[in-house]
Image (cartoon, rainbow, N blue to C red; front, side):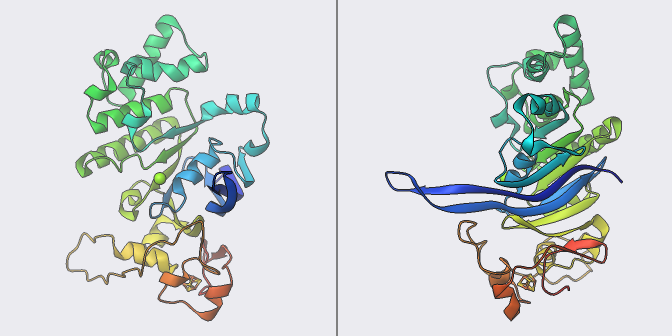
Length: 320
Ligand code: SF4
Ligand code: MG
């Protein structure tokens, strides 16, 4: 498989400012050294509790946020060092679908205008051709031509997410970062949107980075899954390996909270101690150590490397 995107030592720190002079007193290490690839045509699920840096990861990969350090290679080209006009051309390939489609859609525009907007910005179609393209996109996401004249607030959450997806598809992208695209939707609607995303992936050979806060949401759609904790990926594996035999204690804890379909299968719930620490002041060594039941002396002082173990990647001193 060919990597579409290669992420190397990616970091994004936000300054913490205090006082009347807004002096920088520290940094929130939202993304703190990521190394992974997204392969052509795959869905990579990215999971973690809120505040672990998933959204920042997605936005930094797409260069909607400038990385503090590291590289993002798209088809071998380094996006982080690209000039603005070069990057503008590539923008078409790299799109985002947001968690709350309503917040991301301009309420003054009709659905047709919303979907046409990216086409206008990139000067791709005009006049009748543009209308035809909008019509086509509406159908592709399961809506109809007559929806074009209406406003986003007239639609249900699931339909709004379809509008958001149509907008993202307008420029025929190759990579879509979907940032919790179903988290705001009813469970019954979630699977419809996930199925739509899967159909579209097949139809248009799309590659997805699919962000979610819980492992059950990404299970169906993902080929591989990465688990994030405090700005780092602690485990990244093929879906089956990750769900059947997780290695990292944090992955194990998250999985123990996923309900099993068979009630006869007994599963022990691993309850995590305490809350996620602040990324402005992360614990020393392995940042998971204050909550880890397998914590050893070395874990308090030494940061575990993100290394390959049995065909997957894990950052934990238990695996050497
Ligand atoms: Fe637990 Fe140590 Fe592994 Fe961190 S490195 S997850 S503290 S065993
Ligand atoms: Mg988020």
